[in-house]
Length: 189
Image (tube, rainbow, N blue to C red; front, side, top):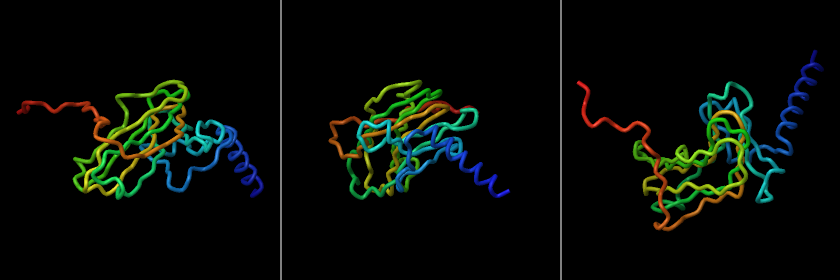
């Protein structure tokens, strides 16, 4: 009976490897998270790369596609406090049914004032070649972490490569998350 389990596990691992091509696990500081991370797989694709170092990928693997996940990293903000920061990467997609994009969040003690942008208003859909994308936010003096990554919604796959997190000048505009539901101007009594 144990041989059957070993064979089944080996076949499952082979299927994942075949789907991922020449893939390796994400580096230690990167993680798969989001609303439904178990419906996605992530890693580093050593074949689909513009940097030559491998491209991080996020691929929908199971479920109906009414979900989202992210490949992300979180760092201490010490080097960026009081600065304007740009997270930039080259992004490529295949058969993305909903949308994909870069995102960044700066956590502060005042959670409602934490800078955040997720590229939802600049979605990448379908199949695209490599394109340069970025997110720019100001990092408040009281920030306690910076999180950034790529988000994928629905089915399909997204890759990111040639990543950079850099301080930029105030001449570079900050990305602002659009309000999807504006607050009413009068109360409903």
